[in-house]
Amino acid sequence: MKNELKSWDPIWETVFKDNEWGKYPGENLIQFIARNFYKRERENISLLEIGCGPGANIWFMARERFNVVGIDGSETAISKAKERLQQENLNAQLVVGDIVKMPFDDNLFDGIIDNECLYANNEQNTLLILSEISRLLKSNGLFYSRSFSEDMFIGSRLQNDAFEFSNITEGPLSGKGFVRLMDKNKIQTLYSKYFNIISIDKLEYTQYNGSQKTSEYIIVCQKK
Image 1 (cartoon, rainbow, N blue to C red):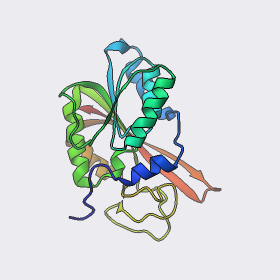
Image 2: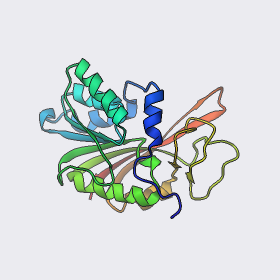
Image 3: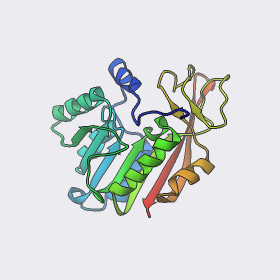
């Protein structure tokens, strides 16, 4: 099957071992959490991040006193996240696992975060993961997804109408394994199967004197 992958690419174990990762959440995620959960009783709000990596977002949500769970396929990433939380006396449940089938009960979370995780899965696995996210969300629960757009710089010589790549050698996604980009039509096709899409916004910036563009969609959905 074309571009068939596990839901977690083992290349990320190497990436997390060899690279120092960002330690702080992006502004868009902070805004999502603040707008939707700050005015509620935080000890009663449960939040899950899929593909949590070394825990920048987990750290933020734990500091804000939410009930926080993170899952990632990388033992290295989870180990780094646990170490940081322990150093600051923060609490979160961190799990090494496969996000295609997660070890959590139905209707458990008020919000689920995908911060550049789903893009590393092919379309078939993405639909399985979206179904799993829907299962885990409470009624009317919210899903935040940040994923790379069709305008992302991936090198001047790469072309693929399916927006799926495993050979990127230029730009921010170089050496990161499998990559799936999306346009708005694909977002509608994939996400609307399980969610009501509340908003689709685009975040873009350039690097290296404008020669490389990072382009991402910020998608906010609610469980149907």
